Amino acid sequence: EPEVTQTPSHQVTQMGQEVILRCVPISNHLYFYWYRQILGQKVEFLVSFYNNEISEKSEIFDDQFSVERPDGSNFTLKIRSTKLEDSAMYFCASSPLNAGTEAFFGQGTRLTVV
Amino acid sequence: KQEVTQIPAALSVPEGENLVLNCSFTDSAIYNLQWFRQDPGKGLTSLLLIQSSQREQTSGRLNASLDKSSGRSTLYIAASQPGDSATYLCGTSYGKLTFGQGTILTVHP
Image 1: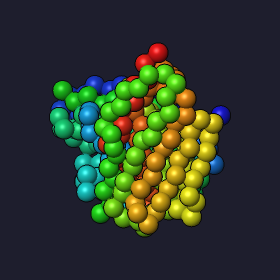
Image 2: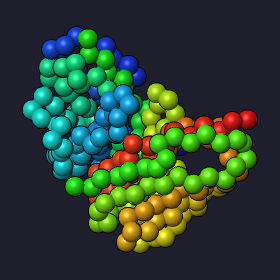
Image 3: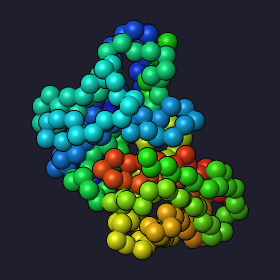
Image 4: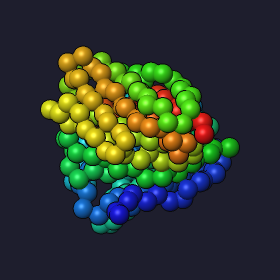
């Protein structure tokens, strides 16, 4: 069964360093998303991406964050200068279409900023 | 701004019980509602998707209903098993998903 894959599963980084989280969405899907979940809190939307551009972003997704689809399979989230409060589980998701279609999530990357 | 609330926050039941998890949302302008399961430290597994035009959806022992006008959805789990123990999340979609805080379910053998 097709699935969304994320790497790495766990990343530890020092405050101020740049990190790149990687995702391979399901191959025939057109919409891609990043969400995050701070420990004990709700899953929060960060950004959606379609047709090689951002279609929507939340207030969390500030200039420190960027997304890219560098080739036909990968979808990345970059955090330029990590802060302690960026520590969270980051989930990638994809869906075939946007409106009314099912979203499939990866297993997540646990980011720990020290 | 959409707000999604799930009740109860936690539920502990003996094996074999039928149970109901509740989800309410403030904005009825949604495309669909999805129920997910999340095991500790893991990702979200989609359980059921209900389109905004549908009233209910079933998969095995799971049945989800949607009343868009009142902003409510329920997830019914029949004959619960210890393997059902997890956190259950509901999310409303209008493009992006907006999630509730989840119900932590524990099913005792």
